[in-house]
Image 1: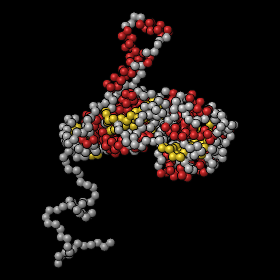
Image 2: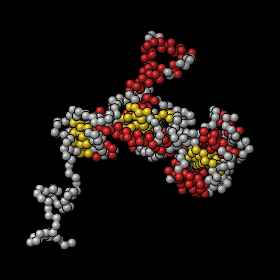
Image 3: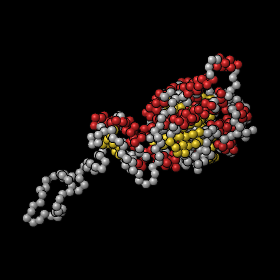
Length: 579
């Protein structure tokens, strides 16, 4: 038997699903001393649900082949999000199907009355989210007096989302004789504290390899101009053509914008953000599982606990805030032994931040520019020639129709039509700007860009990016146009310095430009008024450095310094006004 000491009913379910051997976390859980609580640290996608399902079977079933009639629940599994709770329920359903388990879900955003009826009818296992479980508990719908097993899945995320109080209330009402299985990606201090309070003599299992990133994930860092992030996402999706892809953005607004941009280009894509209702979220996830959609644009919070089928590609459209977010996002792919790719889009201005992020996470990423349209078309050609449809044995009906198609047509014409049909279903790749090479060591001179505005007539502005961030007119001009709602002809000279870039704007569009850049909330791309190159900066606001607050005129005066001691004899000092 590939899974040692497994209940026969569960062993048959595993065999039917094609499980040949346990994953490391499943093997560690099965080898743990019977009857002990478990404190498990394991990576996302390591088979945790099956692991705690196998560990709970001896407690729930004992020597019995099947469950008795359902009444008060015997097991409770708590997950941080709706999607993860529903996923856990689906996994346990097939795992315990032959044992006759009745499983109920209590998930926020779903019909609470239907859940109440399911609990009243009896359930062997209940799976839910903390808030909804607490609500049913307080209303008297959920009876936890018969519990034998409690599972906290992704406990670190539940604490991060502020569910500590809910968890404590739920666990305080469970029997002291229960077994408690706590699963977490990390065993941070607050997780250990929670375990000490609610677990007894727990076996600690750590299957996370902290000295290296996930071995089944290939990391890539793609250098892009700040104004070409959208085009880069398009080309990466087209280059890899993954059956399912997940694209991370930092805000709901960014999700809406990128979702609309991809839909406009013909990509079958869905969006997930915290503002969406449960029905919208459920429909979006179902589209991904059915294959009707092949990409999902989401925020970090909305994507917690997602398990998408055949997810081979994760794109960080905006850099993660820290290494934990990087590893959590990337961990959505490379699951259950499958290979995956995690791509970070790195604007030239944030190269240093990306390098520090990758180093802190212990990730060795392959750096490159975004895939070009030519590279994508070459891969399209290769994929078309290797498509199984060209090697499948045709049916008699197919052959009869093929002969009719060839009547009066050259084979090359028929093949060309097949190529056009193949390409018609694919969105066109975007033409990217030429990749700007990394800045070489030492100073570098760059000639000023040819002006479109008469020299001396333009109004000067500055951007806080320069040669140290690979500033280049190739991407600066489109960026300025986008930020200021102007066109290329409205931009005059561009002078690139080490840490900043100065540029001219035509006086005819100055007012419109100022209004547009004032609404820009990207600190690293803040446009500010400036003097021409070489001109001294305007004086600082506020009182002069070397004069009293009420002083008028310049702080320095010609001649000897003013007398600092008491007034000479015979001279009256300045009058003082009474307070």
